[in-house]
Image (cartoon, rainbow, N blue to C red; front, side, top):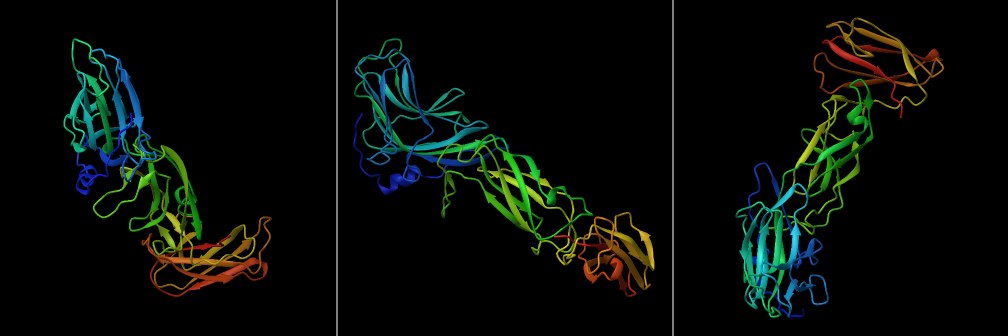
Length: 409
């Protein structure tokens, strides 16, 4: 099949690429994909099919002549009644078609007609391109959703065979599909101190978050880490897509534009203003698919020590941490409470892995108003003296929670 076509008039091209508004099933998100067009030249998701028919197929979507279209041509042989042949687009798992537009032309011959169909379940004819002049056709989701979009020739002379149909043809291009997706992405595995730490652990500097995820429909588009107020890190998956432009959303070049599964590593800087030294509400790790559906998992509360200097030498433990003027332990390791209006002295020792004293180590004291668990901490530090001893003094003031730490690395 060899036919020439002229460049599309501007108005016709705009009509073919007009954005569809087909409504998906309740709770489903939608996205758009283009094939065999000026934006997405090839048609990688188009498949030939035939039901008792003789026909020739041609894929002119990515050849020397440009994106001329997907073609199907009748032959000199007779076709049995009800036979059909053409090109089929099948919706990916967990998705369905709820809209489509195309520019097409065609010709009837020997009882064989060109058709544009939405199928599975049933069939709905939304276009009959029976002119040698290209025209735009649009399906806005009537009778939908459907699992297939077809460009075909069909024998209509039931119950008799169709005679020679060599003049019959259909040629279509500028496909724009709207698909509804019912399944949100899924986080399969997380790995990071930011999502595994206990509130008594301390973090600082850059922390890597590993996320493994999957999506049954349009595919994984992006993974990100955020707090309630700010996105902290973003990693994009490799999608075959056309960036959004004014008046037009992002478009996929495939019916499932993004990978169905994969892992990403995201680096979060705990020195970001979204964190403060002290206990912070946990971060949230999220993944989103191409249809903008998201799934998130909240991490535990995390303690950030950006203001605490590195201990500088190998401190393995703090021993004999005692206070004068306090009210005892609040139930957390190395965390205690000062009395209102009392001077407070805190002392202890820094030990190495063998239990020996560590001289010259930096010891950090973090303290905040009692009861203000998530408030920022005021931080002081000192050096250990002979025999690894350290001492802090706090002036009179309100009740405070405090903790003593030797930050390593």
